[in-house]
Amino acid sequence: MNCFVFLRFSGPAAALIKVHEDLARCFLGGPEDAGVLQESDEAILGAVTGELQETAGFRVQPRFTRVFRWPSSMAQHNVGHPERVAEIDARTAAIQSLHLSGNAYRGIGIPDCIRMGKPAAAADTNRCRESLTSGSSKDSN
Ligand SMILES: Cc1cc2nc3c(=O)[nH]c(=O)nc-3n(C[C@H](O)[C@H](O)[C@H](O)COP(=O)(O)OP(=O)(O)OC[C@H]3O[C@@H](n4cnc5c(N)ncnc54)[C@H](O)[C@@H]3O)c2cc1C
Image: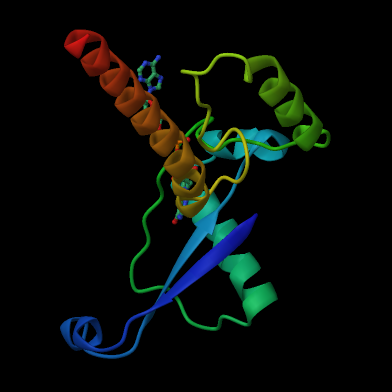
């Protein structure tokens, strides 16, 4: 298991589900362990529950469980990734209208993607503004 995320419900959400309960979201797989996708739900749940017992001291059975399979869905940043990204940047720098952002580059979380996307969107907006301005000044000439 790579990592797990806990959500603790409190406030109105806790009232809806009656008491404070934790939702554990666990991720498995990746290129080092791609075979896990072929395992049965029962085998996956058994492995996850066992690891939660071992690492987090879980002593209760989950109230409900769900298994979702997302093959090849997460970018994998291997050793040498920053150098590869730097080379991509160097090779694409001259193409003004091309902006690369997303989980393949500098961080895989949604906030990372937003952080990368904002300057790209701003650069394109500015370029459009400039071309509109230069177009309208040509028209008035
Ligand atoms: C199961 C799972 C859970 C996750 N949970 C979290 C989380 O809790 N918090 C978090 O921060 N991150 C989470 N992530 C990571 C995060 O969701 C992704 O890293 C992020 O959404 C990637 O954004 P992106 O824009 O790079 O790619 P994507 O969101 O994959 O967007 C790419 C888009 O391009 C489209 N596309 C692909 N090929 C073409 C093509 N040839 N032509 C046109 N369109 C195309 C796709 O349909 C897609 O809409 C999770 C990822 C997974 C897989």
